[in-house]
Image 1 (cartoon, rainbow, N blue to C red):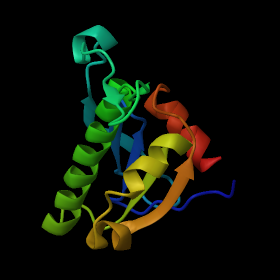
Image 2: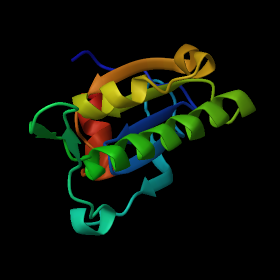
Image 3: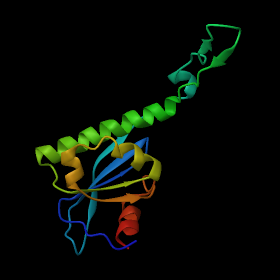
Image 4: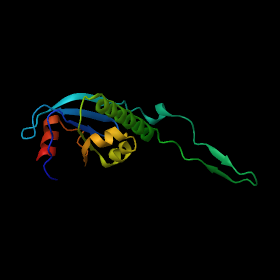
Length: 148
């Protein structure tokens, strides 16, 4: 990976489907200094607490044939909802002038999910995307990974 250039005031958003760190560069392009601006987390409830209904059944109009309907993946739905809320927060930040440029660092799966929720203004403000899962690392380690 080539060395990233992060301007003063730019945001680095490090996320996966359950946690997001919004970091702001308080340094300059030569000597970035990332600080945590915001942390967002969602609780990860067990499956039985999220949905308890058995999978549905479909009965054919003729004969005795039946088939089942795939059960909803509640963890996947929770991740999609979390990432949609994060994209809305980032869109608000861009349109209100909190930041003018940001970089998204997310696991490949989360990156694919959040892209669907980008607004036009957010797409224009994104200066880069990195498909890495760094959300569990401390900020100094994230900085080292991105800037080395």
